[in-house]
Length: 135
Image (cartoon, rainbow, N blue to C red; front, side, top):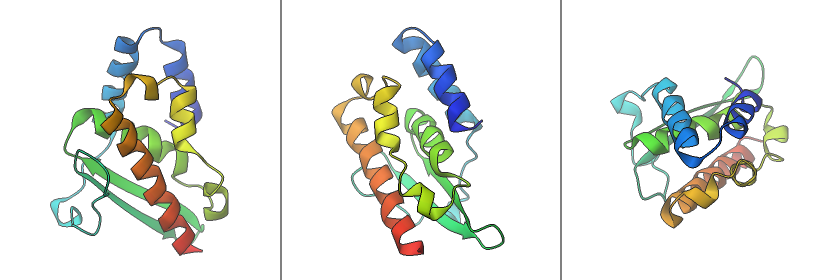
């Protein structure tokens, strides 16, 4: 599911419980990282939950390939949304994406605890930092 489909689906749902269920379903669709990829280098600082993030560049298409995992179900769902924002984009286009702002537009940030909201921000910042290093 791409980010536009996710945004349409979440915006069509009324109430936080329905959105929460959809986020949880998105998290179930996100493949788990193999244990060897859950390294301290991949751990995102600033998240209350453990979040592991890897960003690579597809050499043939020069597009971003992101994989991530978390030890909590809700964060895994939030990761699915974040990855949908950035996966398969060109690095110079990814710099213009503000997934945190998108979360606000979808009405998600106001329902997250402050620590979860800070975690989303930390993940987005880590992606932006790594994208800048790829260029």
